[in-house]
Length: 158
Image (cartoon, rainbow, N blue to C red):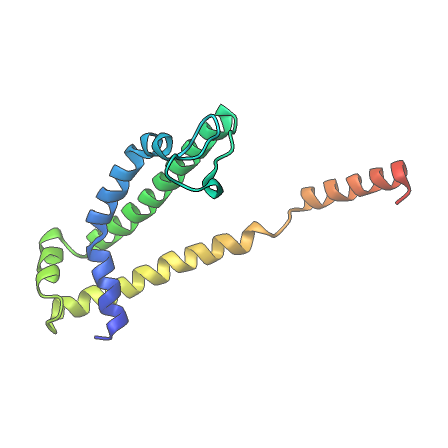
C-alpha cells in the first residue's frame, strides 16, 4: 500500500465523525454569527480600531447566515454520498476492522483501497464532466446574445 492510499482510506473511514461534526456546526451557524458579528457597526472593546465592523442591513446578515448553512448542507450531502458509496462495498463491520487494522497488509485493506480508487475516479469524473458543460452556450443563448448585440449597435452605434 502506498501512503496516499492509506491517508485517503483514513479520510474515508473518518467520514461518519466528519459528517457528525459538520451537522453540529450547521446547527449553530446563526448563533455563532450573532456572537461574532456586529449588527449595528462597532468594534470590540479589547480590540484595536482595525477590527471595526461596518453595519450592514439585516438582509445582508440573513444572506450570510443562509449562505453558510446552505454551503454546509451541500458539503454534508456530498460526504454522505461518498459514505453511502463506500458502505455499498464495505459493511460497517469491515469498516470497523479497517479502523483497527489499518496498517496491516490484509486482503480487506487491498479490497478497500481498490474500491476507494474506483470511488475517487467516479466522483472526480462526474465533477469534471459537470464543469465542462457549464461553459458551453446553447443555440438559444447564442441567438439571444446576438439579438442583444444588434440592439446595442442600433441604439448606440457601437
